[in-house]
Image (cartoon, rainbow, N blue to C red; front, side):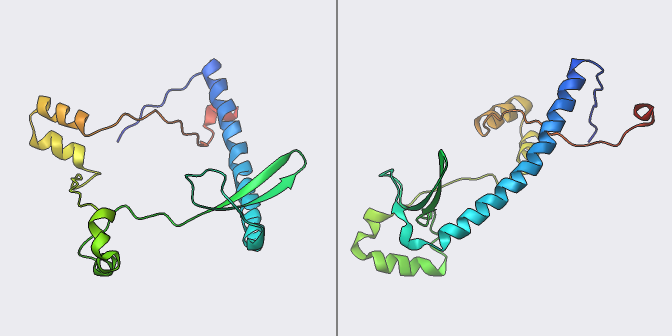
Length: 163
């Protein structure tokens, strides 16, 4: 796949350079931040007797709160997430059904879902199999808009840049 590279010697170039510099700083800061968060999780994990309930009544789990000078950190330990799908072909399903007993139908509902057969090649398959107008309509109904993304990466200096 060909890409078009636009090289500017204008304010856009300064924006690209400024964005790249910030991006590089963020990479370093994000790594440091991950380390700090990991260490706080270890401290919190070692103090389960200090856990308090979550404030939001709709949330399930506990939290550990540590205070700093003018700030605080909450390490949240959410309860395990409830699975959204249960396959009747899986070995656990019979046990689930048995444990739910007479309440099975009030606790679970049968749902039929359709998913693209191959997510990565779906667009190509639609365009190949259907007439252009029909393909366009189907893809519009089966897609959601996505925002543009910005990606910064270093590039080697070219000869003219080294002068």
